[in-house]
Length: 193
Image 1: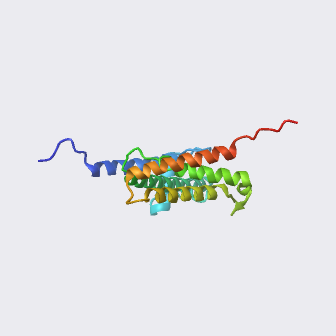
Image 2: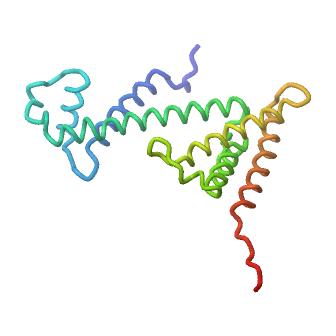
Image 3: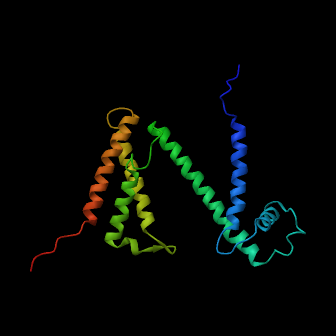
């Protein structure tokens, strides 16, 4: 006998997919240049599926086509990919720690990234550019990676890794990295003359 309180998963997935498609069309319309949702929908259907070639003939090659297809749509796709990646990382972290309230601060990952970013700025490595990008995000990534390895190393000491040991190791690394970061960025007292 079925429980009447269960929510149909397929219905929720279909609803969310429709909502996602609707939000893609609406966000493609918004910006400094307002574009009608009907024009945006026709352009996206033409470029993605080859539909309505006669109705979009006047829009092809125009600034509206360039704004929707070459400017806004790639940004929307990138936002979708980043959001999906962040949600997967969040689920992996929650499953690892076995806590639905898990966040990067619990495992010291954020404070490790902050420490290395602060360190790179103070040493002048932050002004170096790699492929026209600042090197600070690179150092922050290395800091997050180093903090993650330190947490795993501390949690694996003695016996197998448990969620309690992970959380405690993360708290230790978080406190250490935060203390070093504050020490590096604290103003130095001036000598009396």
